[in-house]
Length: 215
Ligand code: GRF
Image (cartoon, rainbow, N blue to C red; front, side, top):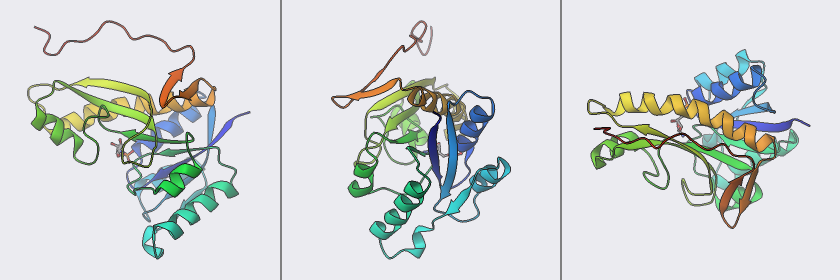
């Protein structure tokens, strides 16, 4: 049985596109049944429409509070029998109440090597900190922002001439690799959460460590 997933977005939707591309290539092992945006008329909705995926706009501004907004989200997801929810650039914090309903079935992509650089402006902050690597993380969501068991990470070197936008582009390329890969692993039933940590059945090991700078 194919895993039924929904993707929640707020904007550009390039990570959504990577999931669509993997689905179309037959390498996602999951079906994107629904795309929900909390912001009207964003590019991500256009991407879903072009792929023939049903879309919904649930604009948080039309709700009195977070609870009623999240109730509307939850109803849309359960109406479509969604099993897993992917946050792909979804720019609303979700409350404990919502997160608990979807515990270990709610996955986020974040543009840093968590737990470093939670929150916004991750690339500027990595540059300012002078670290030599940054990257991206796919993780299960917990009530604290950008917290939760890590599923996959990709490390990306920071180069001497980088600015925030060159670094963001290098990291984004890897986001588009690890998000579909994480969803595929979940859909294949290979991802287990045990004592707050993720175990992946049959996980491949990476090659040699990378050192930056290399000499
Ligand atoms: C990505 O960098 C993602 O990691 C972060 O928000 C950005 C969304 O980009 N959570 P896009 O909308 O997927 O292009």
